[in-house]
Image (cartoon, rainbow, N blue to C red; front, side, top):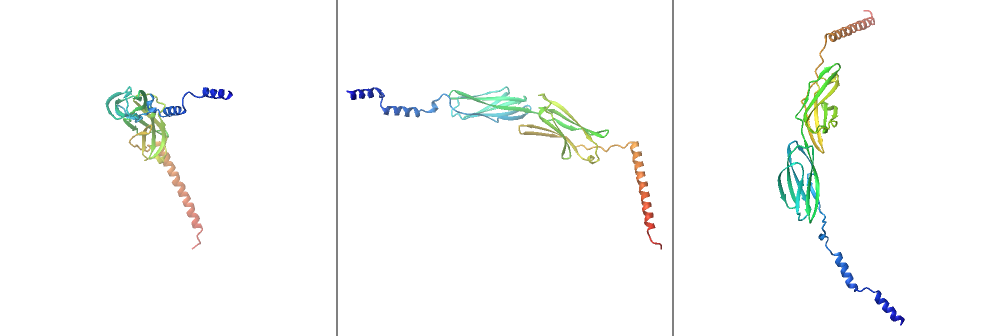
Length: 266
């Protein structure tokens, strides 16, 4: 009787479906395709993701994705748009008359009901219309070097340098200028007067560096004028030369006299 009750108890505790059916269910759960998910994994890319454009110029941006069958692509920007070209998994957009210092451009692609986006940055710049180094002016014992850089943008990203021959004698960053309009900049530098600088070429250079884009502009070379001699300077120089000649003659006469005294009598 006890053994019969034990068998009945085991039957009540056992699962109500066969083991084979459980394995089939587990295999079915494992083989469900992830492609059926409503959130596919795909990337969106804007190329280039950064572009520096001359003021008023245009640029093409290519928006592509890894989605095999994109449902749509769109661009959001405040810049004026031009033509549009498209192909499998990519769309190219033309942006016209770029004048803003920094503009963010957003591209969105929809794939299997999910929308993803990416961002590129467009920067405008203006090469100086001219870089002019004035003829140096002697003020006391210093020469005044004055360099004019005209119609630059953005001013804060320029560096102005003065060179003597191939050597930098002064450099100044214009980062203190935070305005985002075309501007003129004048750099003034006092150069001590030294005889070795006469005849050396002096030039002024404006350099713009925007994330690897380097724009250089240079002035025509100038030379330092030889300082004019005033009447007082001429008189002082003449007196100094006469004194030097007199000392030379006296010393020469003494040396000759000593030499003659050392000679044996004839």
